[in-house]
Length: 382
Image (cartoon, rainbow, N blue to C red; front, side, top):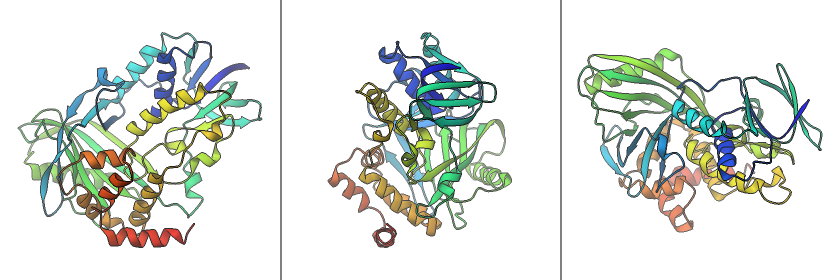
């Protein structure tokens, strides 16, 4: 039974970011590291987008960058000014290739194509069992999301950011390559929070996604019908579907960190790293993986001490409380948040980098009655 200093159960975004940063730091050459995942990470299975200031660790593989975007609802269409932020797109395959190219330079880091079926913590070490092997480690990073955990309780609502996206090649110009569509709520809401999201590559090529923030997924044809109607409204009378993406990202403030132990840390969506109010994952994972690497270098790191609850967790919880009870209010909330067209203060708030004054500025833009009622309701639930 082979022993490692660190094992990653699952090689999703958070695991690969953390392993990459451990590798390039040059401070873990003494440590044996194993990543285990049933997927070989050789397919372009997803697209990540994130807003940021300045340079990032991922600039070399950026596929597109934008500095403005369209925001729309049934009443208006306006341009969002990102200020000193960029909105950057990465292709999944480029990210995988970039990370694994670095990991292959480090003989102390291994990757195996297997599925983890069991984990047990003896207190002194952790045993990880796959379909074919058994390993032990000092510290386990678990990225395998267990939907049964948040589903087993009612204190914290659980929604999904779920979508289907088509990579479209149109036969005539219908897109603005300099302006993605950040949120278009002009589509029928049908009692939910529903919007279109467009990432343009040229005036004839784009990824077009139909996205919902809601509890329940839809039949596949409902997503596809919505995309077809939207393309028709754009004037795309003829087009081909180059590729398709689909996903469902948990949106919840459930305290996953309560399941951490001294030797096991849940990371990624399994650890609550997804931004609960938006479903965005990349930026949060980038920041938290960097903090985790520093944390591992501290003296006798105890995984139960890694998580830090911030006031932003409570803000997210209030929004989810509203959307869980009145899912149709999402369009009004996000429309109010971005009404001024100045996206930078909102991005800073969503990145959890504002001070109290900055928090208040964004919060006061939102429908006050909804949030006051949610606050009253939440106080009596704790």
